[in-house]
Image 1 (tube, rainbow, N blue to C red):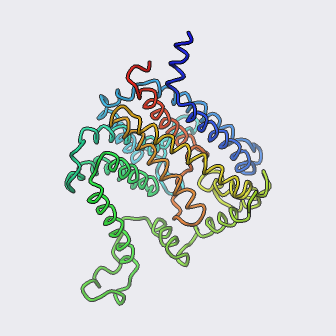
Image 2: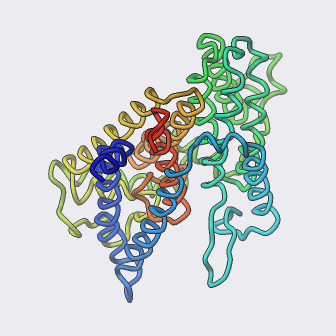
Image 3: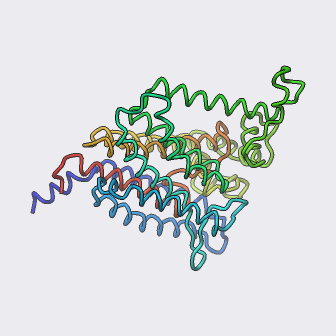
Length: 390
């Protein structure tokens, strides 16, 4: 009996469990103040919903962690096909919310955001795709097939339109390619060149013919595959004079974080969040509520927990028994790291407004489920770091 108990405990990363519980508990505490004045008749509506998503998500986490992650390799194309099918269903049957068609709704108004689960499915399948190409990612042309693999779901998400989530796919692709052994010089140059071309395209889109030298005058007003509001968000970040509606959100967010000072104004004592001056303060801008009510100390504690959580996941990846497991964890860590960086940067005014949720903290069922499934994958890799764990 004791030997079985020790074996089970050895298969569980207790530090990772502890950090996850801290984040989930923090989510409920933060939401209990961030969403308190949103629905006057039910101040704890979002807290109760989040608690349900957390409990059901933990069941998914345990189910995924008990499955040997190696089994996903045998169903690679089935999982990838399901990913594409879900995103196509959104294009055909999805309902539009705030101008974006991202949701599939079922009975009683309950819906899911397939793009959240598509991120996990891409990680599960792309890890196997890259593991099969070990030591064959040295030439630039070797990067083409991996890019096309990720580009298909990424483009479908971009067309919803959802630029923020599409960029998460790009972050997953970049992180996993480096871990898979892509030539760092060639792949790094390719990524840098892509970013340079993107910046140049935005400049040409806004430039007048008079501002360009003769041979380039015809490129003035270069069309971009972006919605007007997406372009305005980027321009607003690069030059606040171009900002429109998003400037109000960012200003209120910066004011909320700055007014919190060292210790914060106190639980439910914030003005920007409690008086609803700050839009989306229980979703996209929930970090602003942390800054306003819990101050620099509160935000530092949250960032410290995130940092230790991510470092622990990296440790799990390094101890994986094979490349596939390492790539699985690397993809999940790349997803979380990018979303944390962009969400906090957006709330602080140092990144464009993209609408990406803060992992484990932001209110939302699809996001919570996909993140907890991601943790399940990490646990599965940790439990099988040695061959005969259970």
